[in-house]
Length: 283
Image 1 (cartoon, rainbow, N blue to C red):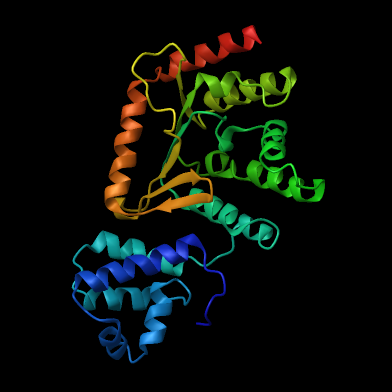
Image 2: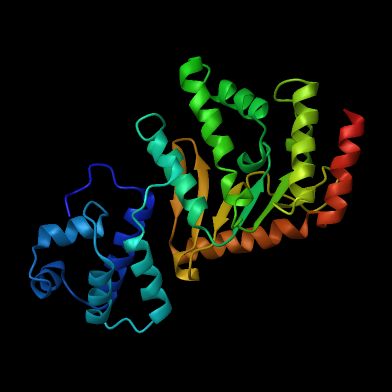
């Protein structure tokens, strides 16, 4: 397979997992290259996600590494063989790679959990809300650059609204629901969309009221995506330099704990729905 100039986060993750298996087996890249009748350079490219790898080769490698976790190996082989284009590929060269990576990760997730403190979750934003947020974050964008960003964000809802919707639970702070990123009409439409997604069963929404005691997590924003097996779960964190993809088990454990902790500070789904209804009346 020809080397990739710009591997996706999913391709990089596959290579990283293969490298972890090799290291755990105590083997050098050159030793595995000899086993595959390949080169150390190609092994490095595979483990960096730069070169593709077939499902058959993934299984050969896993067997050579004496990995006995069949479910995990099956999941890796599935990642290797999933090469079909997704709707996000239409934005390649138009939007930053990370935007495409997030959409692809959401598409393949078995479940999604999110905590948002300052903004309405991207998967639940209206076009006007998203436009206002993008304009604030990137005032330098022209309309030609802004439009595909808004469109891409709306397209991401396919993950929770499609024929096989991914279970999605989000915890959002009251502040995010109250802040008018644009005007009253935009805020009303935004709250109405959230209620509609709740009623359609596309999202489980929990609200953290501002008066809630015992919530020190002002920086708790995160997204957690379930993989085909827990070892392939992924965390997403926004940082000043962009979105970080988290795959280290110790860090994933922290995100799991964080979600459980924040959930304890939130209202139950039915209470949250009623809370949003009351907010609409106050606007």
